[in-house]
Image (cartoon, rainbow over all chains, first blue to last red; front, side, top):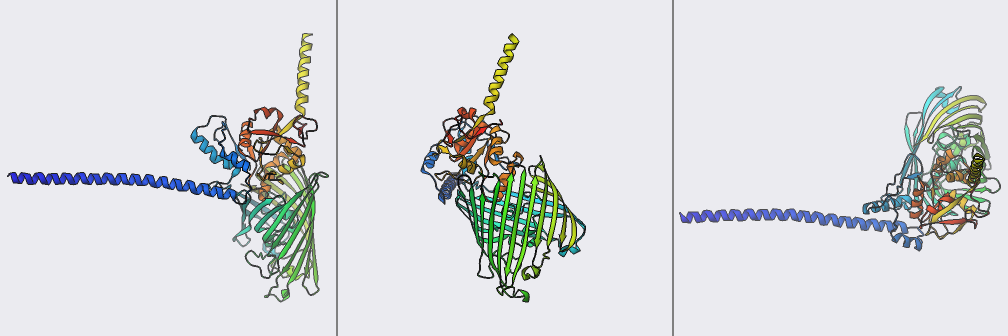
Length: 460
Length: 162
């Protein structure tokens, strides 16, 4: 009996010991897990901080003249009796800060440090100064007669214009990225996505800036200033001469390559220059050579602009010259030769307060190397005057194609001579929405056409 | 006689206030770490038009504006930019759209906001009223324009329409 009791006692003791051991193991596992988690999170935090600091240092040092004085100042913590209540109002294009006077806590200081980059530095990878904006327009149109390729369209219709997404990002003090992607609504019902501009910008100094990528050819004033957002331009349409390639425009408005630009600032006047080297045109007017060049010839464009602000404030003018060799089209016997293209242009612009005067002219020379030279001449003159939220405007458009020019003659578009007068009214419904109404009377290849256009153009 | 004196004093105060206010100067303030102590009117115009985007030491210039309704910002819009104040936002959007700027200027809601921004950003420059200089604190300094301080004869930034 005693023996039996001893066995039971030993058995119970063994079970108890096992239970204690299991608990201990469980506890150890929990503690171990907790410890592991803590160490991992501490390690990750440390690693993150190190990477962050390294990246910030790298970004700041990259292409940056960092004055020693500034670095010293940055090292010293600045005591500012302000709260971090820094709010960015996206409703306006400016960053608006609401900074109230209060004492800072330790956490607030940390937040203010983070916000400091937003205030002026903009270099942390977390807040890389990425801006996304958009533009769009919806049009309505009435035409009393159709000419050219629009012959199968109705006389009046609503039309989605362009939906334009515009993204910029500041990569470092002197490097920024810039892109403009447009969704275009074709008459066939298709939606075409078109990268209209995509470039990286190096801001070396005011005399020397470099853009690499796809940009608007620095040809004339309108093409340099107004791009795809119809909201910016006073009128509903671009001038006939400056229509985009895929809308039947005669000029190479886009280019892929490298562009140098800068301003020399003197006492009383400035000189701006733009110079680009690009792939140039493809085999037809709408063919943009974004990824390859069909021939080894490159297109060169040079524009010079004088801004004599001490003599006439708001005046700017200058010439443009463009040179390219257009590749031959092997599928088209009329385009069996390469074409040398030289474009001469000039602009004169006067913009002061309420008044807007723009005038540009271009001569496009096409030479087939066989002695045949074809000349096309086009231009426009536009004036507008703002009265409160209203802006009445007038534009005269003129373009005269050389009917024998094989480059335009063998294109998918109908390049019609145009001679049009447009009067219109723009009304600023808000800071970011404009309503436009215009009436055009034009002669397109000896056919009189009247057009009424309505547009609501906006930015968001 | 008593009423006449009161009217005279009131008239005197009005005239003094009008005359002093009518020709108020606009002071240019920068961060104290900025080595620039004098800027030409021409350079100032280029700074405002962001043609000049860096100080001589290479520091990026950050424009800070008081609210658009303030006298100083209105003065800049009318006299320096020569545009309509309704087009001020559009002006900057167009600059961004043309890739002339990679970030927009700062617009503070109040004087304290301006002071905070200019104190914190080494390359900041802002335009304030001369009567506001005393509130700026130690981290901000006023710089000369064409060698003149606000209030001196020949100082070019005079807001006559104030």
